[in-house]
Length: 240
Image (tube, rainbow, N blue to C red; front, side):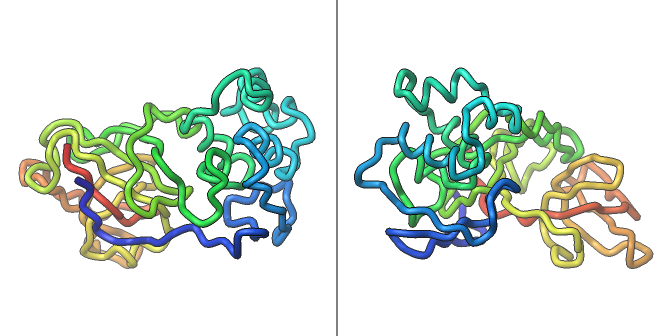
């Protein structure tokens, strides 16, 4: 069961016939552009092709050049119906073309992403996150309720976060912010100025620019006076 810590809401759309592009819009698209929802008449392969074209990529090769997460031959096979579009690839295409994976697969213009979200890394000793390539997640895991296009997951590896989070628990987070004070005295995902990413409880340091990071497991000491680049609220936790 997924424990919902905080509901961040659904991706908003403005109707069944037309919708405004959301914050996934690519630089190739003009903000506010509308597209017709041909859901009832289109198959997933047709919606994928329409999303690519509306996203500013006339040819599959154009999309592959702009997004290294996209393989031209796979995209072509998905668009001509020779290969079924997986949930994983629907999410990749959705992020590249500015639509939801749900729209590509099901013609769903109302709900948030369905099915799976990327697993970005593992939380190991000292609650430090071992991050994998952002463009190639280590895996995909079940999406929590109301997941958005920005939702990602981390897997707890070992007992470094016990007793708060057990081994193999899945931690979900969505948006990061550059003002650490919004997560003061709360559990969160933290990126330090030196590039390290951790899951900690945020406390004030000796100055307004420095922060103390408390570990969940008392075996690991507090990290004092750290420079924080961004923080992200933990939205949901799923115990394995």
